[in-house]
Length: 126
Image (cartoon, rainbow, N blue to C red):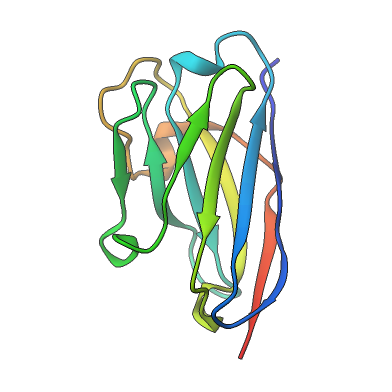
């Protein structure tokens, strides 16, 4: 059974950086898009950025130019470097796998993902 595990979260001051990692299990990892979502306290889970099986990248409008994403299929990992963090970036960050293999463009809809990690907390202090 495929599983995803996030790591790399923590407490950082405003302006600081973290790199989140999503590690997957299963031999079909490279066939699926992986996306990052985040959920702040009291708010709905929102799409951040996603990468397709073919490295096509889609970012939420509010995230464009801020966050990058890349994947290493040899290690079944997807990386999300977070730079110039702001207090409003405080949230639990989740990675998720697309329910459909070989989708050309990552979906921004939560319902298009059927495997989720447990989340990793990112806290940005002022």
